[in-house]
Every structure is written in structure tokens, then in C-alpha cells.
Image (cartoon, rainbow, N blue to C red; front, side):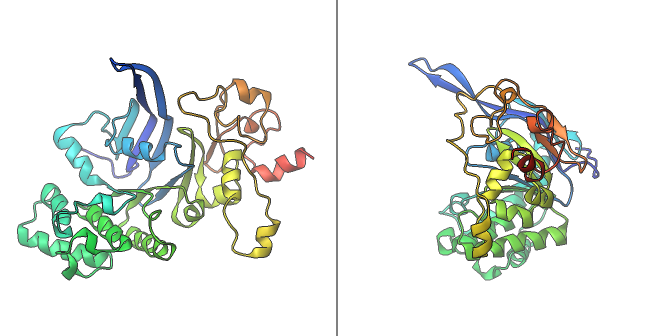
Length: 347
């Protein structure tokens, strides 16, 4: 695979994933559910792109499509500039070495009948030419890198805590020497006290090795500290994307604004003064998504055009993008954060 080191580590262009809904004795397809509905995303070398949103927004399905763990229905996937959408055999195996994944549940990620040494050895045997002795040395090195004693590699998964096992999952992802690691809610199943340790470990590894991360999370407080860029998903689409600090401090989309307003504030006085935005109802069913803007059924700023026309994407001066009619018609925010203009215009 002849790649371009200056190109994004992974790039998805108009990624679509449909799942058929079947019924009846013959199992006929009666509908299509769009889990991912036309997403553009890329992860440059050495950066962290966080994908956030409510459960069911399509974050994990998007990540699995990009890694070809789930085949996309439409779209193009490139790895370092090389189209791997339909790659097979050795080319796909080479891509697997480039991009690895850490899953949400560490206990479900390992074979309970095998010691962790066997799980760490597998990617080394598959993706490297190391001898058995060299693989043993490499496993010890990997355990040290993630802050665990090499002498514990003969233990079974049940003999580790969740935090320790997630560290071993990170070590396994590092084994073949990837440039990109997809992190699917890597700390959501861990105690709060352990989460910071794992996040700091990932940051240290990125600094030392120049790794790129695609970080799937529903923890918006985490994204400010862990992400270089943030993409906010709603009902299978990215509705806002930009620098993490900008999205966090000056959200442009009403959905992003509502999500951020739900983050607790540590200081009691500031928490009491905050304006909480409570969205009406639940997200629409992906079996029957609404027409127009998918968010219009819950949006506090809905206009007539939102109910009939899907908004076009607006590219912002800082390189971010937002998909919302407020930035094109009506109040014409034009990339300004919502509280700045919208609040003044609605009084």
C-alpha cells in the first residue's frame, strides 16, 4: 500500500451505513435504517478527533465503518491517501496494522480462557516478523509502557481490574505499531477515579509516539481536554465540527449547545447561575426520521424552513463547519456562537 504520510491517517467521504429491517416468514426487507447518513470525517496524523453525541447517534457504527469492521453501504474510505473502501487480502491486512481499536468493555475484549500474554502475542505474530523470543520481550515492553508489571502477563482476564484490563487492551492495540487508534468509549465502563489515569496514559502515548486517535465518547466534559477537534453527531449525521476549545466555549448548533448545558459545573454558585437547556422529547426513531432538519422536532429555535428543507453545511472562518438553517436564513448567525446573537435577537 503506497501511502502519503502527509495525508490524513483515515478519511471518510460521504459514509453511509444502512441496516435492513426484515419481517415475515420469508424475511423480506420492509425498510432501511440509516445508522450513518452521509458523514465526512478525517483524522490527521498526531491529532485526536472526538466524536460525541447521544446514544444511538451513530458514533460507534461510523468508527466500525472506517475500520472496515462493518462494511459501509456507500462512501469512500482512505488510509493515508489510499482508497481502501474495497481492499482485500494483503492490502487490508496492512491497513489493519496501521489502524487498531480499543473497545468499550475490556472484559468482553479478551478471551476469558486465555492468559493475556496470548492476546498480546496474537497481533505480534500476525503483523510482525519477530521471533518467539523477540515477541516475549516486546510483550514485556508493552506491559511496561501501559504501567503494568510484565510478570503479570500469565494471568487471566478475570484476575485484573477493569482499569488494568483496559490498559492491556491499549497495549494490544499498540503491539503492531499502528499510527491510528480508534477508542470506542474507552473509559465509560470504568470508575471515575480510574478514567483520568487512562486518559493521561493515552495522552502520554500520543505525545511519545505521535499517534492519531479517533475518540468515540458521550462525555462532553472529556472532549475539551482530550480532543484536538470535535465532531458532534445527531441521528447519523455530523451537525457541528471544529476545534475542541471553540466548540466547547462557543457552540454554533442548538444541539451542541443543549448537550454542553447538561455538563455539571463543579462550583455550586456557577452551577445555580447556569441556564440549562432541556430538549423536548426523545430523538426521532431512525426507522422514521423527520423531514427537513433531523433536529427540528426538538430544537428550541425551530423555524418553518427547518421542517421542510435539510440545511446545507456552512464552513466557518475558523475551519469548522455547522449544519443549521440559523447560519443561512432567519437570524443569519453566520458562524457566530448561539448565545451571542440569538439571545439578543429573541428578546
